[in-house]
Length: 106
Image: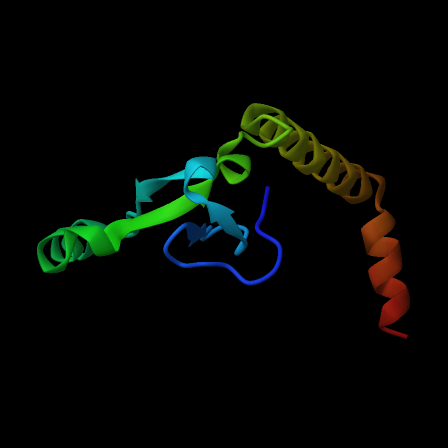
């Protein structure tokens, strides 16, 4: 439950995902790692410079998995892409695109 009113930094922490203040027992610290082609350099530098700076507080509500699993989202995205491809193929084979494009030139 987010803190209402003025937070006390000694007993409350700011969640880095939802940007709300929470009590210490309502979350935990996790290590932040960057991603990308040079992430191993960035992560090594962060750990050497200040190991505690790589830790961020995340509340329990933000840690919960999303309501829709990733494989369902991927399946829906694949279905949409497939539907667009079938529609484009149908427009191409039926000559509808040629008819529409020939009307635009006049």
